[in-house]
Length: 360
View 1 (cartoon, helix red, strand yellow):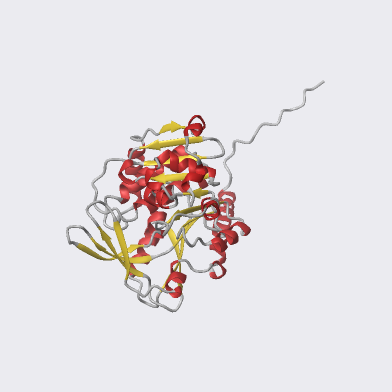
View 2: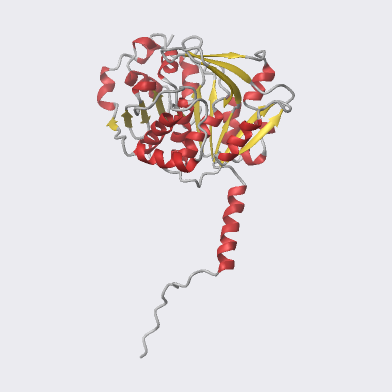
């Protein structure tokens, strides 16, 4: 009996037309949604501790967040920014910079001036923002336009990172993103809490998104005795309040990340860098970390990427100019310098002072 022939996989290269069709299908899918979206554009006027100034710098958190995502990714991530701007008063250089990093800018004209603010940096690194426009509902609507008027492409974003006021969290936006099928929501406070949070408010705040990323000062402000809490105490308390993945950004002392689902944590020191301007470093960290997770990376890899992105942002006044090619090469080099240290919290829980002591 003659043996049946065994089918072998074809090694023939797909035809040119087949390859073009496949690329077209891939582009069509990518064109339907943004992989990673951020919000808020502010034109910053910077004042440094030595009295020098730098005017009309692109800021607001959203651009720095996207830079962090872009510089530490492989270039396959589609990026977008949705923000309100004024009629003809947003510097052309701002939109050009976003295009240069491959971000699609959805700049919505909402009937008032482009948000603009003084950013005043002290010698110890503290920064104060002073609005150059009247603080009003119209201004806040510019910073993060209501979800209902977002372009459809933005509503379908796979991952979104944005900042919020911990005393007035944007619950409606998170609900809308969840209902729209957003795969990952990353949140950072953009200021400290005006007063210690109640248990309910704390639980609502830290559990809103998939990633919660305060800096150390902001985290301490959530608790009645926050100044006496260690970094791990802060993470424990946020875990107990319902945080899923928590990033604690510590400035020059580095950062800590923790996943409550696996009791897996990592910490690392900040990279040595030529300190030029600290504005936006936290945003860059958050963007790199959240984008890493959105691409399937581990929290350890996200910590490395975030630390690298922050170190590059630190060396520039405002957002870095130049090509992503050169920055990505430097980011890859710096990533090899970081060796995060693992930690878990279970063995320390018994020694943790009762959660209720920190809640008013």
